[in-house]
Image (tube, rainbow, N blue to C red; front, side, top):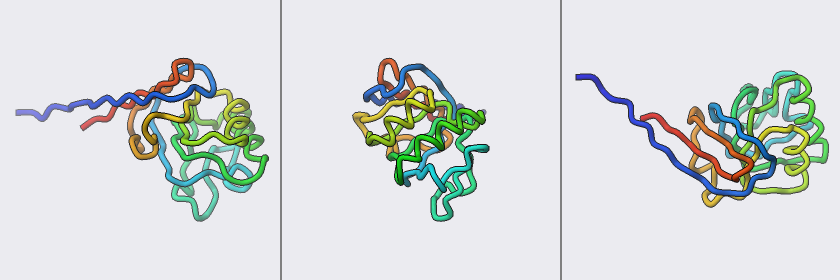
Length: 144
């Protein structure tokens, strides 16, 4: 008898910050992310030494995180990830501030924020996530 793989689907409803639809594997952190000095824009790798994702790249992933920290340079570094092709394919974040709003716009990837549940608590690294910035929804598929 073979074991079946079951998929669990969870839907979060929030506010679309940047329009568009993208889906891919989630990379989740409970830590805010610093742009200037925290990210290598050429590779999309977190380089902040004390960050829980230090050494990991968000390139091609759905980045799920609480938000930005640091100066207004945050948006410049995330814009550079788009320029170098190392950007996340979508972002889901907990709280909007001016750094996040500008960073989301210049990165030009679908973004959803202010969800009905904290995405950092619900989504796990490796989940398949569909971000719909037009509808303000995040669909999570988890294999069990």
